[in-house]
Length: 466
Image (cartoon, helix red, strand yellow):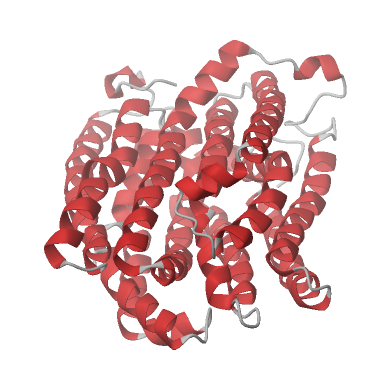
């Protein structure tokens, strides 16, 4: 596909072929992104003498990194969704304005996050569960990550726009570049230069900076149908576009923010019932689980431009078809994740650490946490569909229900009942099951409405907020 023409194939090409074309690069990119995060943990976990505490310290930073991700998705997801729909409507001028708006907002949110984090680093990490033993590792890693936060926001946000504007292969290649570069630089900074956890963070930010440099060059080409302006005054925030974009991104923003809040309380409960190593175990469980979750997110990324474009073009049968196909593949992936978590938990945990106690805790937690994996694939896809169609309230509700309404109460009720950290682990499959049931009811209702619409009908019946 030419970079100077709009991706009209999104509205004409068979859905199966389109999903393969857009989802495969997304899956590769998201799997690579998951491996990108795992690489730091694997290397850090094998630092001589302090590997277990380093893993625990890294896990302490997850809530703070989730907050950063939340603000990044607030801007990036909304912008990429709007651009998909605008391209379907062939409104290229506004799509370019949305793009320049995203750059400005990402820089602003990135700088604000950096300043707040650096000013109150130790109190924040203590609040997230850091002890005297794990605080130095958490601080060392997070300080570097915070300094590069604006780069991270721009890199991930513009990568999503590249994918949504019809070039998923380039988005995938840029992600793969960061992964392979990080895998090479990590051992150099961590071990050869003796920088430990700080070296891992430096490698991470440096790789993203290199990819971002190419991404900016790509969007500065005025011959592309979607490009950044050369004039700095064009980067002034358009508050109407910002409002619409932030409204669409509110769902994933609240989901990530809720994840931060929940991880905070999870850490506190794990420290109370299992000590620092329980937090380290959760860090390992998180990394392994996210490998499968990120694959489903890759399918979601493939679905997003197809659903958004066709909804904008009022081709509802194609929207329904891409959702059903994506949900089917997502379910298969999560079933495989369940099988791997149940039968290969110990070998996977040993990849991250050689500490036998930490291996046992991680393997035990992994088997329990992912018990409900087979029923949450379609849940992720359904939530993403509501987001793609701009149905903000439903997307936000589904994003929050699992974590705040169900998981949070469970992690405080179950540990005292079971008198161990097992109560925290069992909270995950229980909340996943309840949330999946609610998602199924709302998803079925949406499918019925989509089935009643004929191509070309006004979409207001769906309550769209785009």
